[in-house]
Every structure is written in structure tokens, then in C-alpha cells.
Image (cartoon, rainbow, N blue to C red; front, side, top):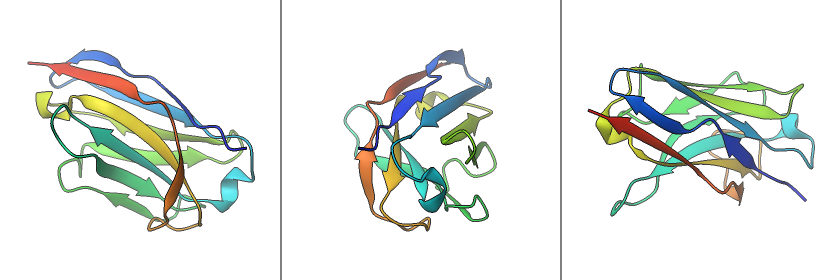
Length: 121
């Protein structure tokens, strides 16, 4: 069974940085795409970043391009989201998700419990 466990959220001032980590053991991690999503109060969940099985192809929402970087370490079954130049509007619960296929456009079947990111102005 695939487990997805996020860590690294917290409170940061605007302009600061955080790095989220997501461990997803339980299958051959390097075969599958991974994604980061977020949901703010009263808003729909949105995908902020995705990465393919090898790390060679990535996707970013327009709202985070140039500020967030998704990466993965297949030897550690872990995907990361480096968030720089954080803004108050980045405040949300961030979720990691594991895909059913290798690409960035995969359907996501396994979800973590979420980690809160709060950016103060």
C-alpha cells in the first residue's frame, strides 16, 4: 500500500522560504509522477506543481512559477517543494499526491494528510 506523508509546513513571513518534503514508499517510487496541491479556506483545491517519474519534466501553476521548485530524489522515495518569495496568498494546506502513471499529467490516486503553510504579511 502506498503511503504519502508530507512534512515541512509552518509559519513564515512574506518573502520567506519553506521546503516541503513528501515521502511515498510502498511501491517503485521512481516509476510514478508526483504532484503538490494546495487548498485555501473557501477555495477549490489547485495543483501547484507536478513532476514526472524521472524528474525531467515539471509543471507549475502560473501563480507559483519562478518562486516554487519541485524536485525528487528517487533513491529516497521523496519529492520536495521548495517555496521561495512566499506571499500571504500562498497560505493553504498543501497536499502531496502520488500518481497512477509516470507523467506529469497522471491521475493522482494516493494523497497525504496535508501540511499547513501560513504566510504572514
